[in-house]
Length: 270
Image 1: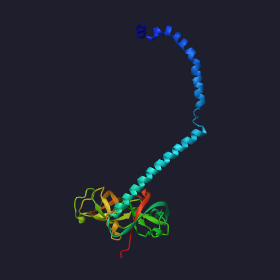
Image 2 (image 1 turned 180 degrees about the horizontal axis):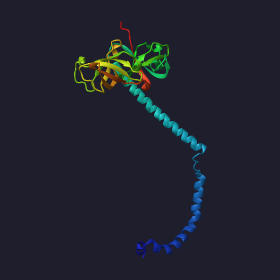
Image 3 (image 1 turned 180 degrees about the vertical axis):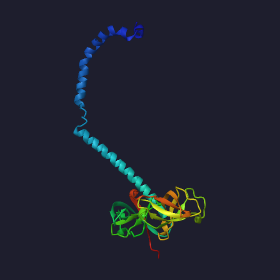
């Protein structure tokens, strides 16, 4: 009989099993109630905090603080790894003994009229050995500028590369093929006043957009020679000189992108 009842659908069993369930539950209800009461005494029930309760607000504040600390630690590690890689790469460039100083931009100032007079302020100065004219690198192979003439004990100015004039460079194609340096044309960059340089190039070698301008100025310290300083973004012919062209060069490191740099200070040789 029991086996047959187990095969019947629930709607058939409900009319006569419901009263039986009540008979069984009535005697056990007091025991269940006592158990719940004992549980509440041993482990009181705590109502959940409201979303805007002081406790909930404090917990959310602590959670955001720990998120910020984690992000800060991760960024510090990333910046340190990049800084170590940059210092190692610059040290391997050669060009005589140099001392490397890392510093950050803390502001800007004007030394005269016009955008070309704007310079950046650094949080390092003569106390760390900074000298006027020392080249500043970003990402170990790009010229960011040079240290200005107003070097104090704890501050100095940085003249961004795009504001320098008369820079001698050598133009390298995007895919260099020739091992002869003389095959690449030279140029002298002069600022246009809009954050770029222009130069007139007379060369039998075809000029193409995307050529890299690398420093080839003997007035700069040797460690800076060959470093990237700009990229050709426009070429136009010169009517008066059929074999010459006028190029426009965009700085590899625009002034607005300079935040922290590595300055190479040539040391005096015995």
